[in-house]
Length: 298
Image 1 (tube, rainbow, N blue to C red):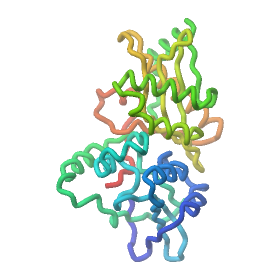
Image 2 (image 1 turned 60 degrees about the horizontal axis):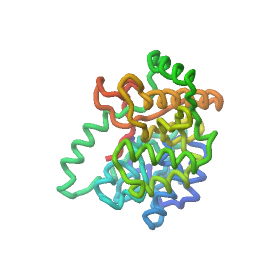
Image 3 (image 1 turned 60 degrees about the vertical axis):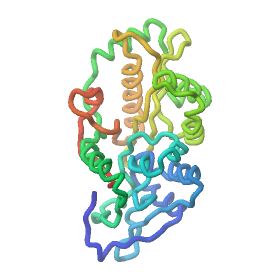
Image 4 (image 1 turned 135 degrees about the vertical axis):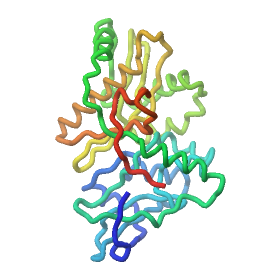
């Protein structure tokens, strides 16, 4: 991700408070906001491990949480932690976008190693090839067909409520219910996702789609308002089964995208969002975004 003269940049362990203060004037993806970082370490019941990068003058120019010598969290931790990873909730496929001081020189991350375990070598190779095709930028298109579907549904009594309009209990109940139906989970299997949403609700973005008071779709995103960027990370979607003529999920995603554009404009921030790994031009994500190089830690 970064390159620099290793003799002029040094590592130093910093506290969560120092990390929080540093993040106040920086941009980052939601999973690297101090509130998420504190939640994840508390779930693992370990002390936060945060690396600060210091320039030759002793000034903090970058910082990031780590676990097992890996920037934390990232997809590799799912393999390393196994079932224990579930207690974190849902991290999606996070872009490794951590706070860096504006106008700072580039920073080397080559001191981090993924793992020496031969069991993970093939996974690591696949992940590297996969992750360089990640997407984290909006495609500028009006999505005319989905807009027509959205308009028709709303004219027939459909309603959309965003997370800043509903309380966290109502949102999480509907999201968990629809998510379980879509993916075949039992509600108890998502108890940590429920805890994560409740605890971090001020960072939750998205909403629910209703028709005659019946929930049709629920979009879960994470958000972070940084110094210059309003960042939205699309995590997952719960949706009711329906025929192929009507895509409730697409309507909810479009509505969330439009809401994101509105919030970013209102706050005077640049909008950036991520849908995670890109799987080719025929994948559904290509409808929403264009691929671009992203920050990946391996």
